[in-house]
Image (cartoon, rainbow, N blue to C red):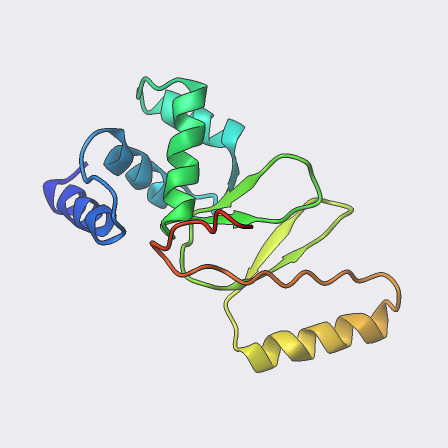
Length: 146
């Protein structure tokens, strides 16, 4: 990884309240370089193995949760039981198609999302499920009461 990229990732980790050394910068670099934005833990493990990074599955799961808890990656609600991580940390909406399992990013305004929801409800009454997730602020610790 080029030195400038490594330095930027280390600084991003530090700003999020995480250590900028060890495996996290390399993992974050692999996630950001992935052509796929929505990855299961199994797919992340394959990316890591292909890059020659030695990490146990338990450590990898903890690192992914740590990155998600600190707002550097996201978690997606999908139609499968397996957790899917979103490598794009910025808030955006998603369409999830149950039949195909396809997840589509929507980088559009709130007005456009509302118009799309209205259209979907009109076209498929009873066939659209809406999930609204309130994201915690980046770097905020999980609520122990939740």
